[in-house]
Length: 146
Image 1: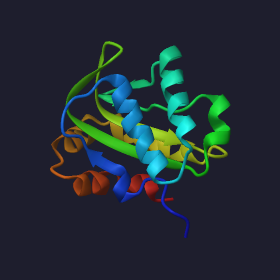
Image 2: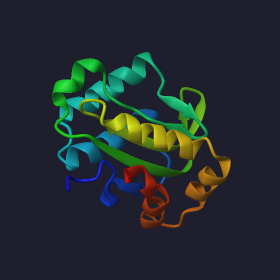
Image 3: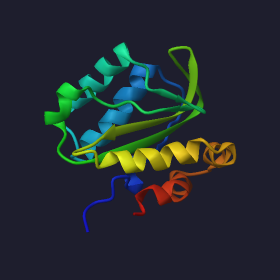
Image 4: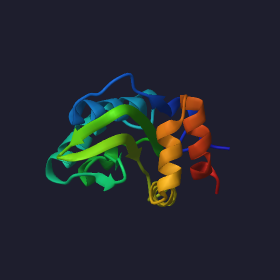
């Protein structure tokens, strides 16, 4: 079986608040660590955020690269970081940053599953309350299931 698009080591709890751009870099760095993207993709994530906010509501932002950066993607993958306090995301409050890289729209099904989780206030509350990265991963585990 191929690697899951969201692996346990790609789910992290951040220590403290950072700027929006630092959060995007952190989400992108996990994708680079996994070998899913080249470092240039992280620049494309920042570039996209400069033109279109990736804030989705319910404390969630999903930064991703521009269409021009598709060549920098080697594998579909997600990174997931929870922050202990809300970050200022172009005036919106974000606690969850999901970095995404997708080949051939493989990531769209997972994005739709994440959207479903984040449309449920009870599920978001569980993610906010999770005490560890492992617990977060377990709560998110269904996004990997086909």
